[in-house]
Image: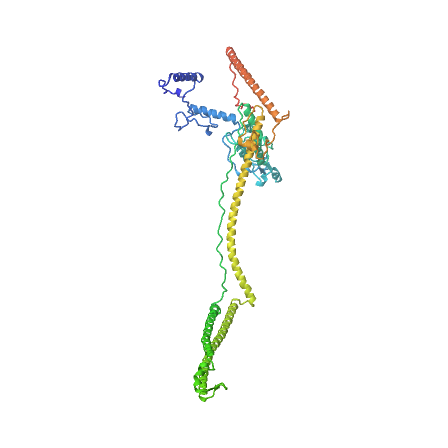
Length: 629
């Protein structure tokens, strides 16, 4: 296209480019003498580009508008749009029908007019109401429920008439269009050819034609059923097969592409909600005493604590004092034992030395063996009296010592008895105070057994409360952890199962598609992917279950009644039809040339014979060429 620019500088290009540019210009002038560059498009008012807008589409205000446009290209484009609209959509209406009202969504309406009840001023007075008469209006409509069906209206003595088909119109208009997912060219041709397309939902004839084309009564009261039938035909694989065959008949290459599967990865779930248990509830241990009872109870408790101290530690203290006094009394016996030993050493008889000391006072007579003189005896008596006095004095001192030790022991024993009596009194007082406290705390209790049971129940309740609080914390924590782990494992396993099943299904679809296309005459498909070959166990791969065979055998034979034979016959018939069409086209061209030659000759004959030309016949509206599938 740069060669067509006036500013193309030949001198700056090579000789080869100059020759080639000149050749292109000459060829363009020969084949397209009216072509201009740059091309001119429709220039609408307020269009900034002088060459017009290349992307401009048909305008709605051109429909039914015979006014010529100032711009030549716009006027040509307008006529082209109007012609295409008539050819492609011969039943299209303009202006568009009115917006639907609430009555349009009812199946019909019931008119209770009688011949004498019609509008007296109108030309239809004396006639039964008929919706097909333009200008005739129902004067007395029945209740809304009488328009649900013909039977309901007839029971009320009226005539039932069908309402516009707004529901069916919207259903048919919602079908996929060209370049949209689900569009089928053969189905679109089916809709147009059978006049199922509804352009004016207020036109009863278009509604009836669409219902009849879909196999329903022209005034079928339930357009939802008609819509369901329309959608069933829209999804019918028959039209997809027609599209496939039509594409093959046009010479387009039919390709089979294997489907690839992308594993699913589910997003992670939010963590499970977890809340700590409430703090331990404080048990009520207050007996609910009044102030006087509380003071009395406080005094008894203090007394009980003091008596408990005396009962326990006081006894140990008294035992320690008595033990000390007993040891002190035993210590008093030690001097007495020494004195006893000293007294035992003092003898009443005189020793030889003492007797020798008195011998000078006597003459010893051997016959009698003793002194016979008074001085000797006086000496002896004195000596003995002195020893007896010393021994008696020692014994008196010994007895005095023993009496002191015995008196100490008797004193300690007396104190021990008194202190034991005091300790017994303390125990009795402690028991009395404890009983008084028990009586105050348990006014309803009659026996000690009841109190013991209640006290045991109290302690068991407190221990159980502490155990329950700790156990509930552990249970609450374990529930969250176990549920989190269980959900994670289940989701992982479900995701694996989903991916495995989907991957196997995808590979199986690819395998079947390849086998089917390879079985069709004149069609081939590529090899199965390595992943699918290994998964299905076909080709050189191995199956997961250890089998070397394929998923199943596809050795198929076709008899005369098989659809494959039908496809072969259809393809052969299509080729014959295409050949016949080419022959017909050649014959039509030959006929047209002969007709033109005849018309020229007839014109020359008329001119030679001065015959006036015949008036021209009205032009026939353009028709669409037949569709060949």
